[in-house]
Image (cartoon, rainbow, N blue to C red; front, side, top):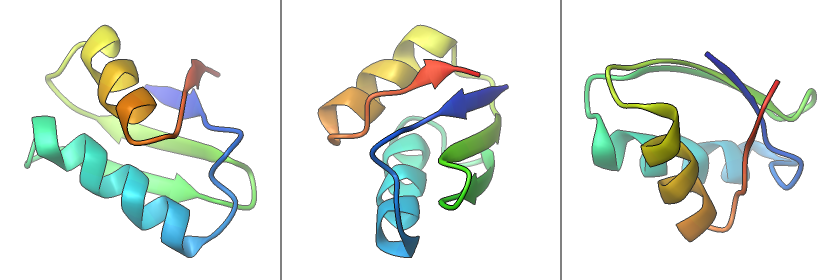
Length: 64
């Protein structure tokens, strides 16, 4: 799935987003693109859970 994260603007943000996703799925495959403010995620975790952990980390996400 691809998520849009408007507040992800740099590499540090991308690392924080990656850590947040890995906190609920350590095996997730994540491709963060701060320039495009998007992240591609292959995970077994549902969208609601991902959005919740990203929101808690300060990176609210929308489905792109």
